[in-house]
Image (cartoon, rainbow, N blue to C red; front, side, top):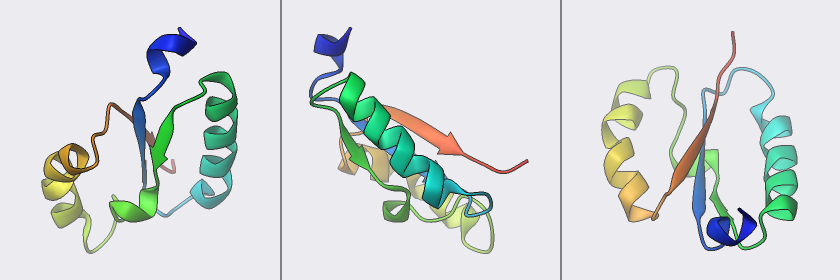
Length: 79
């Protein structure tokens, strides 16, 4: 499975509400160790998926994902 993950790009999305700034670096480190060659596009690249800008952020996500060659997404949100 690690061989299939090599060269893949994972996007991180966050709503800026609950500890994503702490959780995403931990997830990134663990996934990079388990799947060498995986790259990440951080949540700051896309903007917050909650709040005043959320409609524009969500509307632009498909194009932004293509722009960065994203293969998978981890989306963090508060409850």
